[in-house]
Each structure stands twice: as C-alpha cells, then as structure tokens.
Length: 130
Image (cartoon, rainbow, N blue to C red; front, side):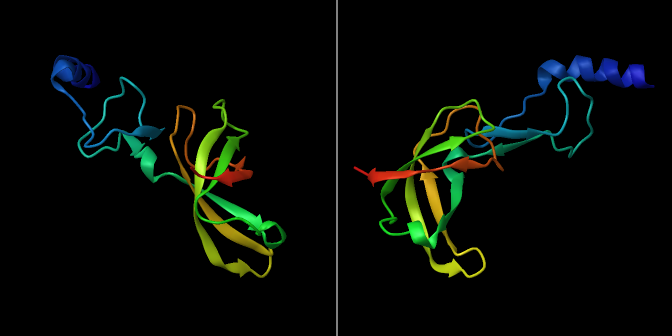
C-alpha cells in the first residue's frame, strides 16, 4: 500500500506546483523534501520580509535622542548575516516600570538570507535617516 502511494506521488510530482501569492522568505519547513503528505498539510511558513521588525528594549537612561527616523544597524549573534540597516519606526510612550525600559520598533531597510524570526541582536542607533 505504501509502495503504491509512493508510485502515485512520483507520477504526480511533475504536475504539482506550490506557489505563494507573494515573494517571501522561508521561516520554517514543516515537512522534509520528498516526504509524502496529505491534503491540507502545512508545508512551510513564508514571511513577507517587509513585515519583519526588530523590537528593542531601550533603558530609559539611554532614551534621549531616540526618535522615529533615527538610523540603526542591527546585528544578530545567531546569524551569519552581517549588520542590517534599519530605522526607528516607533517609540512606545510608556516605560515598563519593572525593567525601566521602553519598547522601540525598528523597521528593516532590507533583509538578506540568514535572518528569521525569534533572533536576538544588538541595534546601536546612529544618525538621523537621510
């Protein structure tokens, strides 16, 4: 029975095309290449790179001068990618009382390979964006 399913899958292989509705980055794979799957099986997760942001916790003591439009360079220690240019997109109006920090959202100007969700990194802010 398994051999028959494999033969059927092999015969259909050239006919199967999986196409996303947008250009994206593969964030995770749910099945291995060549694995036989049923209908409605999740194959992978795609992320639109333009929607990925970096959420930074900035100590309130270092908040002076941090404002939307400020440039930053994000480095991820778990990634082989080099620094990635970003810009401050938003600064939370409220500080967290326990950590004495403020959430700052950075928007990337472009992402290369090797960047995925749930990475930790450093993002020193530099000069105002041009």
